[in-house]
Length: 83
Image (cartoon, rainbow, N blue to C red):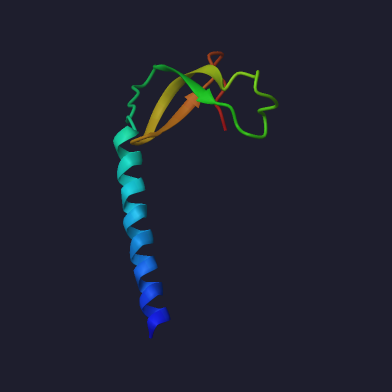
């Protein structure tokens, strides 16, 4: 019985801590909204990132279409679509 109570108590603490971490993260996030024809930079994928002196972004790219809030279809400045 004692072990089950301690396990439940630990689980309640974990859930409380997770809620605090989520709230802290969400306060720091700044949503960004782009319009069609805006120029944006894209983060470099981990597989392409070689060292700490490499740039963290690539671009600029043009926003062609807004698929849903926070999701955009991008295009090179030459007119070639990004996959």
